[in-house]
Length: 227
Ligand code: 13P
Image (cartoon, rainbow, N blue to C red):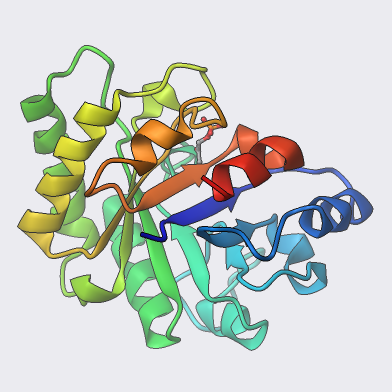
């Protein structure tokens, strides 16, 4: 079955030329469905079938210096938007903000990719992790049509560390999120790469991957999207 692989380029690369070259080197006929999320500043200049943003603001327009609205993303034909990433939560994004962003995106028919997992540690067992995720999702998804969102489980300790969660743990967490909230697609993110992606994609309830570092290497990323 086709899975969904989302590339989160974060604050990379440093020039539009390099961003365009990276996008051009990613297969458009991959086995899995692929979404590229470049930095906001490049969004209108990247060609790829599915493009996503890395964040948005919840207000449509007005005196909000530096912000980008869901309405503006829609105008650029953006189909997906990551919200609640742990790197955003680390600089102040709260679950209430994530909730407002999810509603603003859905109002423009953009699919929110809601990241959870901030605050989990490698020492937490499955039950403690689900408690933390529940506290995030109860607020993130309040009043939101859960059938229209994607949730990405990204244990913060696994992000950019080279230490990934086990596929069995991720499968259990995915089942929890799908059954408790009725979310159709749960992704995993956290040091996913060409060597470990297959074991996650083989899990029945893991809908795909949110890939950071490995999405900046076209060879590695093309391998992942063709698994
Ligand atoms: P890495 O794949 O670099 O660990 O990043 C994961 C991530 O944060 C994707 O959103």
